Image (cartoon, rainbow, N blue to C red; front, side, top):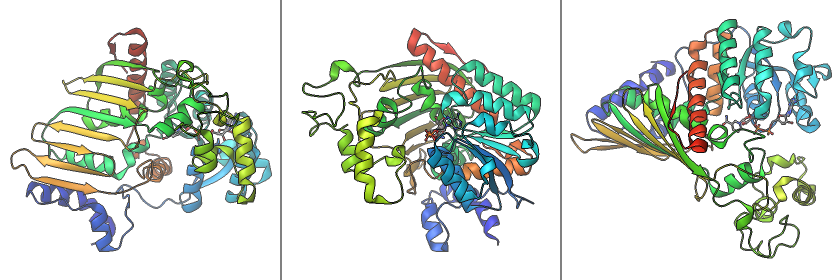
Length: 461
Ligand SMILES: NC(=O)c1ccc[n+]([C@@H]2O[C@H](COP(=O)([O-])OP(=O)(O)OC[C@H]3O[C@@H](n4cnc5c(N)ncnc54)[C@H](O)[C@@H]3O)[C@@H](O)[C@H]2O)c1
């Protein structure tokens, strides 16, 4: 039996073992026994492409470099043919790594999209720029006959999301939205178990997104997503992954949404006595503060990608300290212009009566979504590293375990599906259609309206 055949039988063998109430073999265990890579994502509809998909990368920052890395590791599948980024170091790094000639390197996305021979040069564009730079480039790409890999959130407003949906439909082009969680082995397995009927009918879901306190401070207090007016509301910026995953697991359209949430801690009134504008200004409480920039970036060397440090580490001390003195990442978390809630809860009612409760929490010491799916015949409880399926009739428990990266190992499998969809001209190869993606965003917009207006909101695509 070929590996591909074996992999395609995996849901079946797992279903059979669970039905016999034996332990479901962890995939990592199976992979170890067979000497295979742990997360071998195999979609039986994938096939070798005659030529790699040629893409223009718009935005070579944190996310853009993940897509560039996929191209570097899989040259038969994806080739970067042009890049745009105002940051010269990122632009150059990408150009060098992918052999992109100078005349195909651009400072801004609009110059890259204005190349007269764009349609001959490329099949697609990858949009990995800040949230407010998604809509116009996406619409332009679709109008020019190119497919798109679009970072989430699709766009900052509901109207723009609908515009992109309409344009994708009218042009017939592919828009893959980077809902990476769907591609994590953890959520794929849970979805397979639900679809196999092992917990009967889904009745309700509880889902927790623990952002982790330092991650919160980095991205949503100090970072580019701290203010919903400049970026998007946090329910969209961070949690549209969760509205998508909940909707996907439930397998129904959402009907109504309700949300509470606010910014309770990270604001001026909570600035401790003796604190200063920057952690480097002689703050008297720096030694006790869990959000000390000196601690996070300088001493612990965490989340350094925002400083664009050179490979030569000999200057890192000086450059990180310079970053703390000149960028937002050195500012006191209680003295920012942030407005994103640091905790919120969302209730969702689905069309056929399923309910879901979702919480986003900043004040936790850990990351990794926690999920509970309650069904008529059993339940699933998980934490992104492992989950347990319990069958009510017998009380038997089956546990599945796998350790992955922060995105649960979903990034590259997601790109692979998109590359295959573009290469085979078949949007059905994507886990999430643009309709599904827009609906999950509408759930988030509805939650934000509810939070601000204290209403129960409808969700209608
Ligand atoms: N899928 C996910 O899980 C996930 C995770 C984090 C971020 N995101 C989203 O991905 C997108 C990018 O986020 P990031 O973390 O990579 O940010 P980033 O700041 O690291 O990268 C964005 C890049 O866009 C470049 N850019 C800015 N203006 C530009 C312009 N006019 N033309 C070309 N390039 C321009 C910036 O210089 C930067 O290098 C955002 O929309 C973000 O919300 C998605």
